[in-house]
Image 1 (cartoon, rainbow, N blue to C red):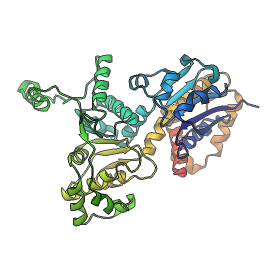
Image 2 (cartoon, rainbow, N blue to C red; image 1 turned 180 degrees about the vertical axis):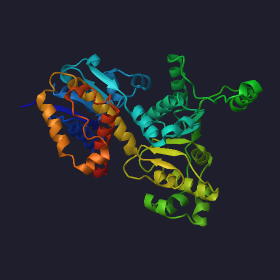
Image 3 (cartoon, rainbow, N blue to C red; image 1 turned 90 degrees about the vertical axis):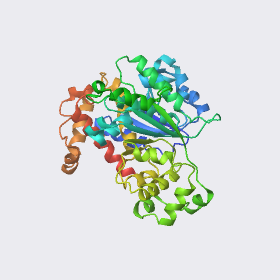
Image 4 (cartoon, rainbow, N blue to C red; image 1 turned 135 degrees about the vertical axis):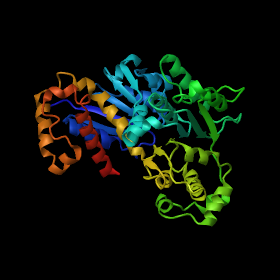
Length: 424
């Protein structure tokens, strides 16, 4: 009888999590029948004690709210962004968790790669043309969003990021200083990296237009900031009451009346946030469910009133409800990417990290090879067509290469996607 290996997602609340659906689908696709993934309700104060109760059958944990910072004092960051952000959503055990030292609990951040991959898979080559970006929110996921934009800037024309968030007591927008510092630290750590700033187009330097545009962007006497803040707008009580019963379906299917359009635009404290969203090439909303509902209605009213023809691309990390109000409003004019896409791609990377040692060890015996073949033979012709990869596990020598081979990775992500779609 094979030894059972365990992984789980921890958080509070946790009942809504779809991570078990994704991870268990991946284990099935990989032929890892002796692996199982569950979800556990664990609070910040309970995390250390929970880990101390685990045995050596446990290989990894996924961390969600509110544990992504709490885990940092229990392990060691093993990738750039978990260290730079002081936030991790993944813990890998290299020894018995109950007695593990912090150096034996490896911490990683797969949220950043999840955001990047979601945009790359949706925008394809056009991601290289991105110039303006907006982040809605200023929490841990917003930090990961900023990290993703820094990475995207290395292969695009991204010149400025605007953050829509609440304000501090001194009136400054939350997250702005932290995100600017994050960018400066990245550029200092990677001397050849590209900062987020206006790009110099061909011929500008010779004509003097570059200097003129730079001065205009930065201001004659002010230091240029790559990340700027916009206060999260508020709405009048009348408007909030009027649109309290609006649903994502209704917002997406019906045009706002002139009266409702006028009401929402007059009731909003400022249109700065709405204009920024409308002008952005990519928008990342990191706020919890329903927090951005007012923004969604105001965005639709603004687009109708201003005859906006198209918007950029929005990634809303929320996947419950699905779609969110903001996603529904955005999809009428632009590309809307649901939070399930980020969830899928960050989970794909987690599976890789959690199973790496096992997949590369001698414990994966011939029985696993036979099980992989059985799983493959059970896939219907229709499913084979969907994943476009009938024979990826033909050679058991690919144990460690499953993730290195693009076809294998595509197969695995499609298996996970199918399971996720069935669960939603």
